[in-house]
Image (cartoon, rainbow, N blue to C red; front, side, top):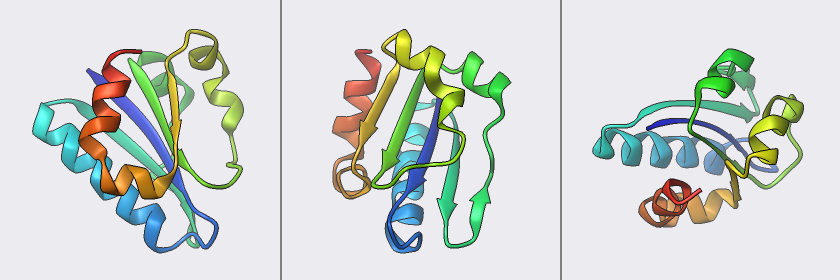
Length: 104
């Protein structure tokens, strides 16, 4: 499975990067291909290209604020392949969230 994700929290520090780590760890454990873009205090890092979105099986948005470039995910949203969760939930329950994403 190929996963792309964006993480962002209001302060753009702790939860943004903790959610990124949780997604990457859980995907690695499952043998998934993953790319996580962070939108934090350092701006946008590891930016996801449209082609990567198109190739992904699922998009996880672990966000607590509006993000830049959200239009990249519109087609996946229409296909029901976008899961939006709170960054705190992603940090606490990455296994459950990845289970949910598999069902999309």
